[in-house]
Amino acid sequence: MSHRDAALVAHHHDALSAYVRSLAGSSPQAADIVQETWTRAIPALRAGKVANVRAFLYRIARNLVIDGARDRGKWSPWIIDEDLGDLIADDAPCAERAALARDRLRLLLELVESLPPRCREVFAMRKIEGLDEAEIAGRLGVTRGAVEKHLRHALLVLATRLGEIEEA
Image 1 (cartoon, rainbow, N blue to C red):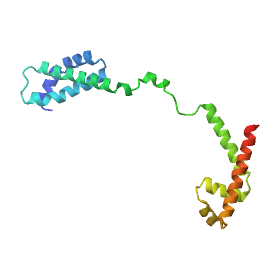
Image 2: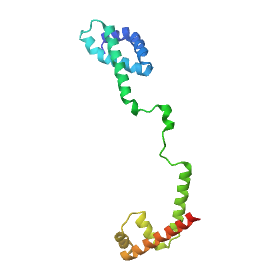
Image 3: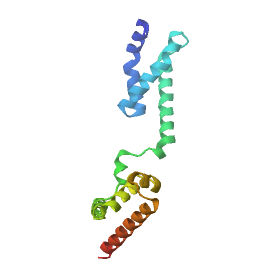
Image 4: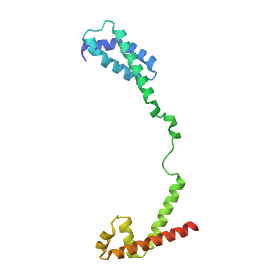
């Protein structure tokens, strides 16, 4: 910024700021508008194309305030007021549901632990590691039929015990 620009800004800044605050309301918003006003005005002022500097600055500022209001109106359906944030439904489960889910998971882990060792191992490889029957058979050195038998047994035991528990 040249010395001439700085003198011009110093001369008009306070009055321009007061004018913009009277239009915009919020001080931070007004400060942004004043800054943008100077950014837009300086090139024309340097070129000497402006007869009435004060009127020119006020017109730019007023147009920026109007543009800002138009933009806020356009986006307002999608902008949530901070005070209304508590009214928005929360996707997180309530404390009761979270506690029930933890209990159910603990129970399921206990049931898996109660399976016979080879059955538990096959079940973990399939359901936790995501291996298919052929990969499990290859790792354990058993037939694919044996893997399927262990999986059926594990699922049957778990489903039966979970059903018994829920009925009780």
